[in-house]
Length: 109
Image 1 (cartoon, rainbow, N blue to C red):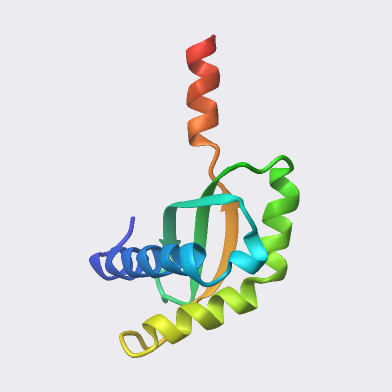
Image 2: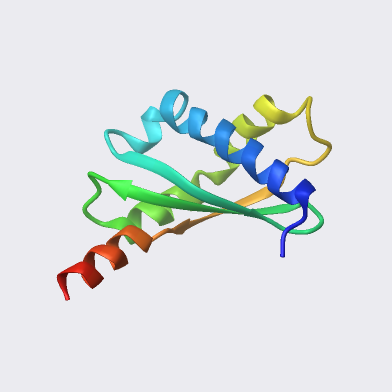
């Protein structure tokens, strides 16, 4: 169960990381369409799980691996955006959110 503080922190990370993906890291993600569907923050606010949905990507696991390789750059950009508002810039990890794909499969069944 998340506290109000964790939820506010997660919302801030989601908003700012979305902006980073739209503007700052096109050289990394190319023409892929990345949507951040959720963020979970640990109770100590030191770790964040970023759930993303991908479009225009053929090999999604490879894309997630590529994001993981560049997560230091993403964290630095995030720190530049939220550094004045928070004490800790969390470590981040990316996970594929397959909710939409699972829902589509269920509809087909």
